[in-house]
Figure: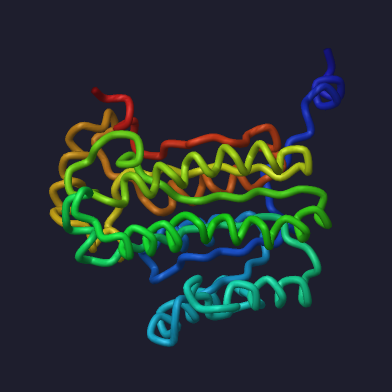
Amino acid sequence: MTDATNTALRPSLSFDLAGKRGLVVGIANASSIAYGCAKAYRDLGAELAVTYLNPKSERFVRPLAEELGAPIIMPCDVTTENELEAVYAEIDRVWGKLDFILHAIAFAPMRDLHGRVIDCSREGFMTAMDVSCHSFVRMAKLAEPLMEKAGGGSMQTVSYFGAEKVVEHYNIMGPVKAALESLTRYLAAELGPKGIRVNTLSPGPLATRAASGIDHFDDLMAKATERAPTHHLTTIDEVGAYSAFLATDAAKSVTGQLVYIDGGYNIIG
C-alpha cells in the first residue's frame, strides 16, 4: 500500500482551533485553570472572548487577555443582572457565532464552605448552586443559537473528585459539583442532535485562588501527590491541553463525559 493510499484512508481529524472562536469565563490570574485552557486554545489558533469578575480582578485579567489577543474583554459577574447576557450580545455583534465555551467558576460563602454540609444555610446553598452550577445552564442556553450558526460546538465546565467521593474539607462544594456533573450529561443529551458537545473536566487539586478558600488545601495537594500513580500534581497547562483537544473537531464524538486529569488519583481506592 502506498503512502498516498495510507493518507487517503486516514480519518480527517483536525487537531487545531484555527478559525474557531471561544468564550472563557473564570480567569482570575495566571494560576487559574481557565487561563491554562485559554493559552492552549490560543496556541491552537482560536480567537477568544475573555471575562473578568469585577474592577478589582480586571487589573489581573486584562493583561492576560491582551496577551492572548482577545478582541472581547468584558466584566461578567453571573450574579449581576444582564452582565452575562451583555457578553453574549457582544459576541453576537462581533463574531455572529461561537464555537466553544469554558465555564470555570465556582463560589460558596466562606461560612458555608468551611462548615459541615448539614449546617449549610439555605442562602449559602442557593448561592453556591447559582454561581457554580446554574450559571452553566445560562451560559449554555445563550451559546446554543450561536453554536447552531457555527454548525455545532463544544461546552466545557470544571469539577473535582469531591463530587464523586467525600473529600475532607471540600464540604458543600461536593454536592454542588455533583449537580454540575449531572447537568453536563443532561445538556449533552439535549444538545447532541445540534452537534453541540458538553463535557466536564475534573483536574486534580491545583494551587489556584479558588482552591485557597478550602480549609487545609495544602494537605489535600500533598495527599494527591502521594497517592496518584504519577506522583505529581496536575498543572494548568495539562488541563488546558486536554480541554483544547475537546474543543477541536477531533473530539466530535466525545460528549457527556467526566474527564479526569489528575495523574490517576481517581483510580486509587
